[in-house]
Image 1 (tube, rainbow over the protein chains, first blue to last red):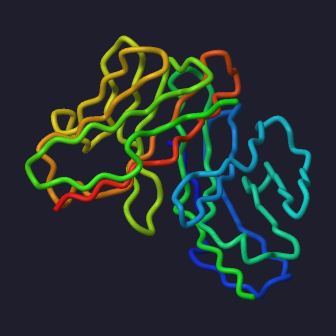
Image 2: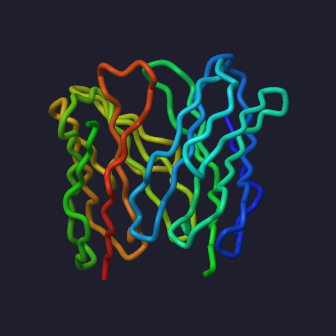
Length: 115
Length: 117
């Protein structure tokens, strides 16, 4: 069975601080995908990143960066110089491959960025 | 590209009535669509997987007679909440998988907030 653990439930930071959101996953698959989504108060899920299990390169996109470590089954997400607009719930998710693959979501982390 | 719409975005209905929620892939074909339910401050819970032209596969604990799913075309899936009760009030989100996308990514709709009074 697949499992995604987001141990942090709520994080509060002051604007311009850096913040890291942790994600640990469990799977028996050798090929899988990892995702991060942002859910602002409006409710719509915003796709942030998809990472293939064979690609361990870290990725940076503007103020966002992701650290994928297969050895520790972690896929952490860092926001640099946080802004109030970053306030949202962030979900990490795991998917196997194949036509019947499903997304397994973590419980989500509520990030509050204070001015 | 890869836009998924849901209609309605918000619905209030009386207890005992049925409500239909539509999920459409606007610019791609989707053989598989998924329906999720999200309670306040909780994660997304997969309710069922909907395959075009066949019966939906429901997750354990989800009543198939309560939540009717129809996936009649490659761009449309519907979820009907039958005889709705206040405990059915929730945020319902659909997603769709592009038939031509080998990454298995799901594209999410904006969600439908159902309130049953």
